[in-house]
Image 1 (cartoon, rainbow, N blue to C red):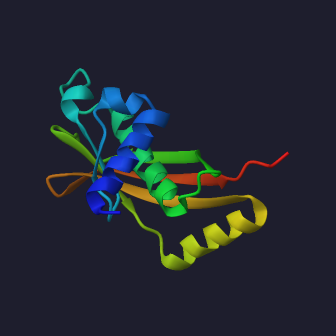
Image 2: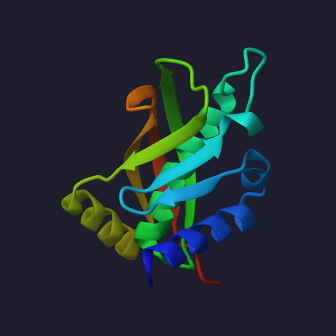
Length: 150
């Protein structure tokens, strides 16, 4: 699958499963590294900068979509179990959240644990950048779960 169609697939998945993404104007800017964007114009606060909740949501979506893409398992659910964010500076034009890829060994361990136990956890980091400067740093623990077959 080409990069463009994979971006479209991820965008469609997010819009279908998380309808808020449409109102926020969320789009997938890049697949490697996985980068999610949303315009500040649709995510304003009273100071005409990006609303902190929108920044947090876009960062969460970047990590969520990264894990969904890594697993590519229709029978697995991805959920966030814990997260934190540090805001460093205002975002004035575009919320751009870049998920930092864990090392290959960590991803392999996640997939092996999921296959063996039906559940696995991973910590993911996301940087929100604008004009080359870090505006926010997000870290979250995500859980992949394979539902029990009855």
